[in-house]
Image (cartoon, rainbow, N blue to C red; front, side):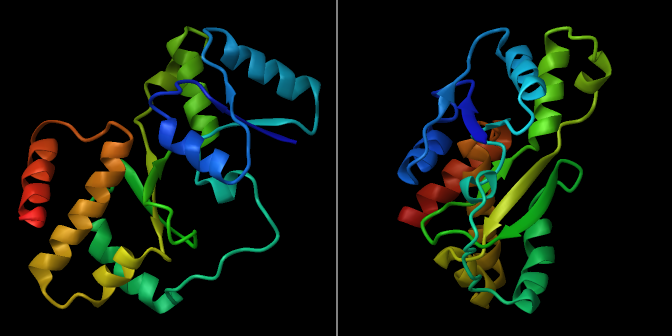
Length: 195
């Protein structure tokens, strides 16, 4: 049994809505002790798992038998991977290609276990060393989204770079991780696109 939960309804709004669109309910677990409560429940009930709604794309959180086929072949993904990796800091992000619905956006996720341990260390739960570990995230690229196909087929190098930057910056913005100079550049680039 998988229980989806959110600890901040406003920051995780996009993920909550994506879960609701697929017919799932999301628990709001925003209390100070909820992390410890979740761990206690998981230990008490063997076949119970709590997963934060933004820990991965919704199709991976609650797996179904029928997976969506990817519009990109493995060769195309291998060709695209280094192009996108040049736009993201490798020490902070791992690039992951997923076959999702065409309407799903590229997203940034953090593994549930790592996030939970860091949250507990922030509360002083005896795991202070976990809080010292650097944050590492997965940038999930939707292989079925039309923009990803457009990036792959774009021959103009500067246009392709701008498209990649726009897609990755949108994913960062959705997680409130786009700040400072990068945010300013994103706004300027967005204005240029709509001119």
